[in-house]
Length: 45
Image (cartoon, one colour):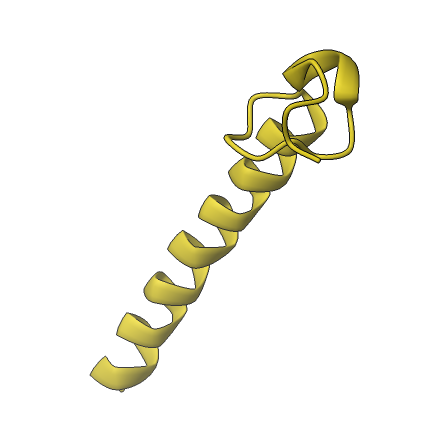
């Protein structure tokens, strides 16, 4: 039972991290270009 609880907690934390990364990428806050050449001034290609 303890393994299940810990697994659910770890899965929840991982889901929140992925959701934050996706949100940052859509807002242009990613360290990668993300396809928006206006954001990185074309230096990423």
